[in-house]
Every structure is written in structure tokens, then in C-alpha cells.
Image 1 (cartoon, helix red, strand yellow):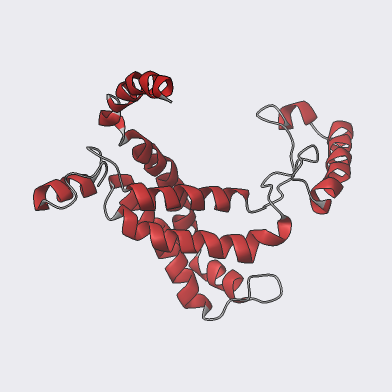
Image 2 (tube, rainbow, N blue to C red):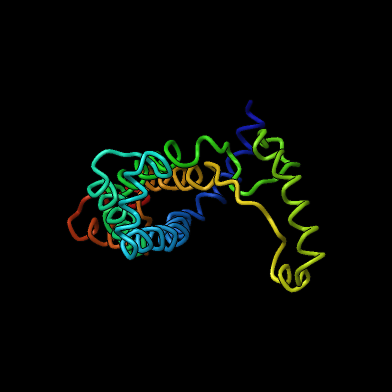
Length: 207
């Protein structure tokens, strides 16, 4: 045990020298999530009537109660939440409604499709729906190769089938959960400088 402790101390000392950069990870999470949330919110706001119809219709939509209110809450949370993430203001607080939005999306929109966002029959996470997509994709490729400009159509990427599983919503939820516990990060967020100015949270690793 003494040998382990002796070997551990210098390694830990090296890592402690890197604490000045502990705000980098929250910054990168914020910069990754902000455009995703902004785009999702803007899409809902700019097509608000269609969003309300999709939220409320029980046949081809989500069948949610109070669709106008739910659509406004979802769109506003995503759009304005994205702005707050971008500048690092009230990050812990806005993470909560954003996480709720991701949970609602995962449970009401994506759950029945399984985990995968893109259908990949070779994945160990593939469900029956994804396995069936292999035949459909092969048929689509054959049709395009025979009757379409297949090389041009696939010149910027492979032809795939969107499975629309919970993968992205779950990933965003985990990232937001991390921000909820770490805060917006040192030096690069409004939260950090507000904390310094008010004397609150100055001694914590992140605002």
C-alpha cells in the first residue's frame, strides 16, 4: 500500500496542475448542445401551427394534452435554453427543463423505435425494426442503382434509414445532466463571472 501511495502522489500532482483547465469540458458540452437546442427550438417556433398539430393529434402525432401550451414550452425551452447554454448563463437552472424536454421526447417520440438513431442491422443494439430495415435499404439501393443516379446521390454520404431511436435524446440528456452538476465552467461563462462578482461559488471548480 505504501508503494502504491508513493507512486500515486506524483501522478496526482501532475493532474492537479491541470485544474486550471477544468472549465474546458463544460464549455465544450455547452458549445455542442447550444446549436442543437437552438435549431430544434427554432424549427418548432418557425412552424408553430404544424408543431401544435403534431403535438395534439392522437393518430399521426403525439396526442399530448394542451398542445399549444406544450409546443410553446418545448420550443421556448429549447431555443432560449440554447442561448443560455451558449453564453453560460443560468446553466444549472436551464439544464433542468432541457432534461425534462429530452425525457419527454425520448419517451413519447423515440422509445418505440429502440436505441439506434440510424438503422444499423450489424449493431448489437438492433431490434426487430432495425433488422427489417436491411431488406428495405437493399431494395432502395437496387432501385436507385437501376433507375437513378446512385453515384451522385451517395456522393456525400452513404444511403441509410433513419430509425429515430432514443440515442440522441439520451445522449443530450446525459450531457445536460453533467452540466447540471458541474455548472457552466470557469472563465468562459457568465455564471462564473457573476459568482466571482457576488462572492458566491468562488472557491468551487466551476460556476
